[in-house]
Image (cartoon, rainbow, N blue to C red; front, top):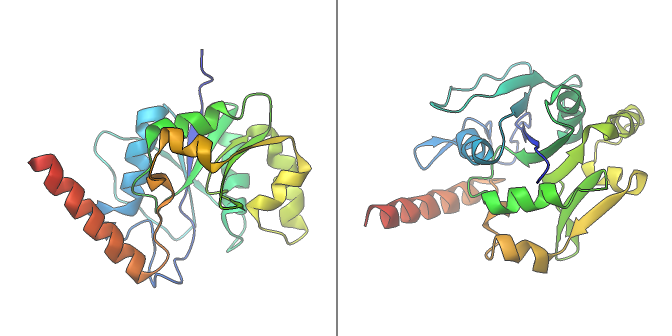
Amino acid sequence: MSESFSVIILAGGFGRRLGRDKATTEAGGRPLLHWSALAAAEVSDDIVVARRPDQQFPALDGVDWREIVDHRHDRGPLAGLEAALPLIEHELAVAVACDMPFLQTDLLRAVAAACEGVSIAMPRIDGVAQPLLAAYRRSIVPQATSLLDEGDGRLRALLPLVEHSILDIEELRVHDPELQSFTNVNRPEDLHAVEQALTLRNTAELV
């Protein structure tokens, strides 16, 4: 039987390159956060959203989540992970960004499954690790805290500190052939492309 896991949605970024808060930015008729939450709800019974103290999110009908406030101001996604992991209901969580509108549920489950026997399972695309769609065990909190105390807020910096597995592109494509899950919104042009893709998808679903 597959291990149950929580989903942590990291929503505390400032969206500086986008010019606005990513989580509440709308695409395809709903906030970006809602797209991540809809995918999370299909794979987990425990969703935690890590946010800044000043953020507020609109509710999503049919999907419940708990909100955790980052302990450290403007220290990046590692700070969100440090705050959320101790409070998850399961021992394992898949962490995703709040601006990933095309998350594939099969891939989320595969990333979680790859964490069996290790502390982190992280995809890698073209030689670059993808820490914003990765599985983390609650046991890594001390390492996260140590890195943050030392001034290092990089999620990738956790890898040398714990046992981990890497999912390379061939494994990822089994579950997400076009790697849609890794689409995110960093800049206005990314938002425009996502809007177009969502419009095309919605049109196709109506045909």
